[in-house]
Length: 242
Image (cartoon, rainbow, N blue to C red; front, side, top):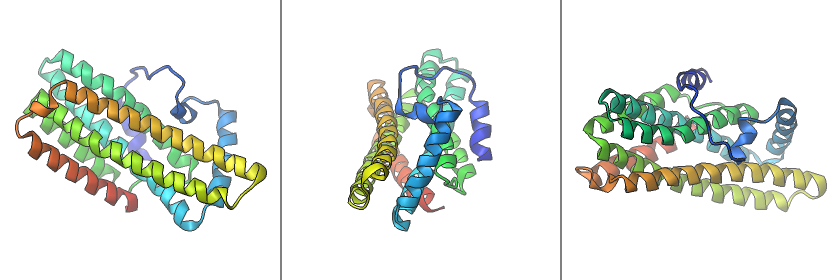
C-alpha cells in the first residue's frame, strides 16, 4: 500500500465531485458505518467459493493497479502541458484527473476492506503510466487525447466484463442463501456493482472528452491506439495474477 499512499499524498487537494456516489462509501463514510460494512464484507467473502473469492480479489487488485497507472498518466500530461504553458489543456487534464484521484482512493480502501493484496508490480504500473503520459503529451495535445481514448476504450470494456462476472457470482449466491444472510450478500454485491458502474461511466466520459478534443486526428492515430490498447490489455491480465 505504500506506493498508493505516497501517490495520493503527491496528488494535491483538488476537490472531488460533491454528488452522492457509490464510491463515497469508500472515501467519505463515517468510521462506524465503515466498521459495519467491513464486517459485512468479511462475511461476504466467507460465503464465496474459493474461485469466486479469487475473482473478486482479482477485480479489486487490477482496478487498483489501473488507477495507479491512470493517475500517473494524467499527472505526467499535466506536468508537460503546464511546462509548455498550455493552460487550457492542462485544466482539461486536471478535470479528468479529479475522477481518477477518487477512484484511486476508493480502490486503495477497497484493498483493505476486501483483504486483497495490491499488485506486486505497482511500481511498474506507476512508471509505465508516467512514461506513457509524458511521451504522448510531448507528441502533442491530440496524441495525449488519443492516449486517453485508447486507454478508456479498454477500461470501459474491462469494467463491463467485471460487471458481468459479478452478476454471475450474485446469481450463484442467490441460489445458495436465504433470509437475512441472502439480503446482506445482495447488499455487498450491489455496492461493488454500483462502484464499478460509477467508475466505468467516468472512464467513458473521459473517452468522449478525448474524442471531442480531436483524439482521432492525432498523427498515426490507428498505430498509437493499437499500441496503447494492446499494452493496457496485457497489463490487465498480468495485474490480475501478479
